[in-house]
Length: 193
Length: 161
Figure: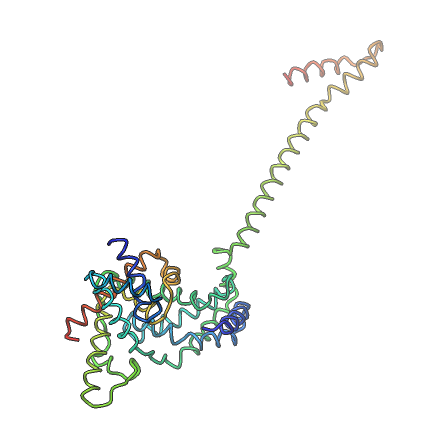
């Protein structure tokens, strides 16, 4: 995000914090995709991801007035999402268990989940199989590891911002990132990729 | 993990993207040539980078904003709930005001009790016998002096004791 974007977003957050719904709608448009995709890749459930995303924005609107540093809106809203996803896993009592996805087996083949650079039919098949393996492997990780990997690789947050968002020490972020990455790669290799 | 390995691992991402100086890159390369564990970590980082690079965002459902807006409007239309919410879960500022009001009530009540005590002591000191005794003293030589009043003084002082 450029400096001007940060300033624009800060101004929007200030207005929304004073109750300006139009300003909040713009913030929603900017951040809806990242929040929804984080929730979707964590829960692997489109309906749950939608519910979580809606709740994230409702809570954000209600509490934005209390946020002192409006310039950290993008990280603050991700923190709400991380907390709500954690609540979801607590409710499901699957925090330490391997998550069972309820997505269809061919979900990974859906063009919306990956960029496609393959051209021939064989390449497309191999690519789709690999995509499927990546998503299944990611969902096979403990939520703690999946959370850190998504925040680091997909969200592009720094270790410090992940520490703030997930409310864990930076050292724990580093170790979960390293272990999660190793487990993910091992799982994919075990599938023959 | 050795300290040296920790230092090297912190630089692996930059090593992969070519963001290290020539000397730093050379030192990482030398370490990797003799440390299998760090070499494996480098492979994991490289593979994870490429795996996540292939991921793309799914399009969020279109109806979400309408649902959010409806919830926001519903909350705005229920000021009674907000009032109760504010009463039971007040904000920091409200809590401060509440604490100040409670402190003021305690102080005023204390001051009131102190003043009442003072007044009752004043009332006690203005015992009728003072007036009566004054009267007795001024009319000491009067043959018609009030003997009943004298008895009252004696009875009153007995009560005080």
